[in-house]
Length: 597
Ligand SMILES: Nc1nc2c(ncn2[C@@H]2O[C@@H]3COP(=O)(O)O[C@H]4[C@@H](O)[C@H](n5cnc6c(=O)[nH]c(N)nc65)O[C@@H]4COP(=O)(O)O[C@H]3[C@H]2O)c(=O)[nH]1
Image (cartoon, rainbow, N blue to C red; front, top):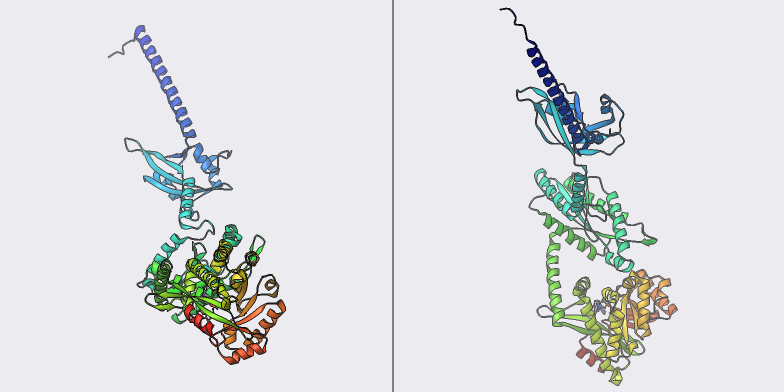
């Protein structure tokens, strides 16, 4: 059929349609461009990173946030050089991330990536931890166009999580693990050792006299000491060993696995504990103060069988208390007998509290004799009239009373009884010159109200103050010489006398003895006991007598049991003594009878 000729009208119609089509195309192009601009602006302003690539893996999107995360924010470098300016790692920050592991390329291989963590390490810039998601871009027809990945910076969140974890598991003062951390590690150590049959050890360290440092030099210096101590302990151990601070001045060391043969384990742990004790020998420098501290260390071994975390901590704690009781600055291994001692001690503590409420304490009196004048003084010695156990010796309960603070009401009661007694005697002409010596414990003496309390008692009972002699020990005075001198001077101003008890067992220097307002030195009974058989004890006694004479102080010897001991003392210039030779401590009725003869 012959080709139809188009009319002019038809041509014009066609042309106008084409124009319209072009215009439409132009509009579509413009709106696409606008959409692209819009998308671009959005991508550039997102705080999350977006990367995309085409089906060949060529990057098509690498938005501003992504460039910043990679340290390329202001980089003039072309994209193919970017990779040289950063490294990618797994979240541990050590294991490099292979290209095939990069979320975008995993997505390009068809994988839907969810919550993958990667670390971006730009050269010379802070590392960032990213949480990434990604997926392939696939059309409705199943054709893959490429892949996209989105990354969210979780560095700050992780740092906050780490800080919270640090707070939960570490001690903020020393940066050591805390009780919570120790608990967890000990639990897993017990599980491991139960399976492997290996032994571990727990060392419980408590600083000796830490409370005194805090009370006298203040908490700042106390904190500083704890920081120094933490460092010294850490330096004594291997990197795998755990040192935790579980409370005030309490540190615990966990040695998880001691691989020695069984016979050597105790030896090995002892040498570690001794290393720690030795590390305390040099003075601690505390803002200009040279402070000497010592530790008491309790140790328990474990193999994980039938043991709980609490049991182990309790055992090490019990052993530590035994180390303290053995004179401090020493170590003790736990043994089961210790546990029954602790049970007894706990029972005694609660009974002691009841005893204070029920006023079960009484005072016995032991005469002090002068070879020329006869009985011139009396020492007041407390006794506990226990409802079941009978008379309990102060040696058995004073240390517990000291630790629990119960010594305050007990000591107070003894002082009051002594003052009442002095008052009664003052009204009887034959007893009027007698003095009473009263033991004062460290806790009592440190009490800020001590001076007022003593003067109030002296006033209330209208006692001649020089009839009251307070017996202080060397160790008590040495804790804080300045404070001791000040308190003693205040009481001395009221007329009260002082005797230095257990003299010779401490480290008194002449220089400080001279500063104390003392009346008397009391030779400790341990020297008197062996004076006839031990040349050293004899020499010590002679020295104390000479020292007393040169300082113008009375010297009394305690624990004199035999005439031979007394003769030695008299021959060496000590004419005052106290001991079973003359009389044991007596109840007041017995003492009155004795004094009448
Ligand atoms: N072997 C022997 N011992 C003798 C002899 N003569 C006396 N003693 C004992 O030696 C102790 C002397 O008291 P201390 O050294 O102050 O030692 C006292 C003192 O440190 C403390 N204490 C006693 N009463 C009190 C008190 O009221 N307050 C305080 N804080 N402590 C007290 O308890 C410690 C023991 O007191 P006690 O058992 O009464 O023991 C008394 C006494 O009975 C003797 O010839 N041979």
